[in-house]
Image 1 (tube, rainbow, N blue to C red):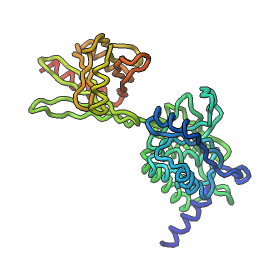
Image 2: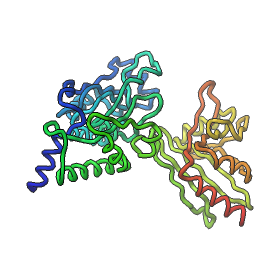
Image 3: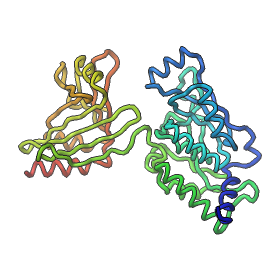
Image 4: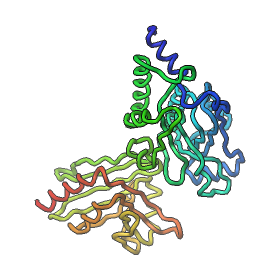
Length: 356
């Protein structure tokens, strides 16, 4: 390791996102330990348990998290942060640990009564934002706490300058890229000094990919069935996969909205359906009652509908499309598709179909 590299790593180790006076409460971890409550929570949440991380990110925080999950035999988790920040280097180390574990992240506090307002005062600021970035699914909504960023500095001098500052900045940008976050997030953080803070709104965080709320961006691709092209749009969510197919038959666009599960579950859902429908921005659309509106094929439940130019235009104006099946009392089964990045490809496919 060269001298220059050692200097940069040394500076990175002392870079912080809060004053030394405030960094006095090392982060601790907490979770429900009652076996019955853990079993119920894991069953309801697909095996994902809640871990609550509170306090300052100090040297050794990542190792303490590893020890905690080993002691509690945690296999999958969502980490709720409530932290003003701390060590930049340890924040990134903690983020990489969380990514390696494939855990989720959000911002909040332990809430035994499930009060919606309980998370309002919680924050994940400065170095904590870099730990938050490690989640494979990163949740930030109007019901979570707040995510804040500002520029880095050192405990001793209060700032870095020249070549060292550029190198540390490069390491931060590289880390954000590694986590799949837009480097613009770092540029925004430099606007606020050590005594200020930029609080990202949920929309801002989504645009910067700081948050994804459990969903990857949808991917639209032209595929071939035999010699016939069709458009496949797929979006991976943390708990389900949405697969939507668009076919063209005699100048008519046919859509199959698919919910990917497994053969047993898809057969059970289709076999017990009482009605199926789409939702355009949470408004019901294309409702079919009875047991024939959706069909199971292997691991996918398909909701098929023919689209006229008018109904396709309505669909393509939506921000979010949902496909849902009712059949289990108050419980429904389905998935959603975010439209903004794929609506133009859907429109292009439809134009070619109607013109053919």
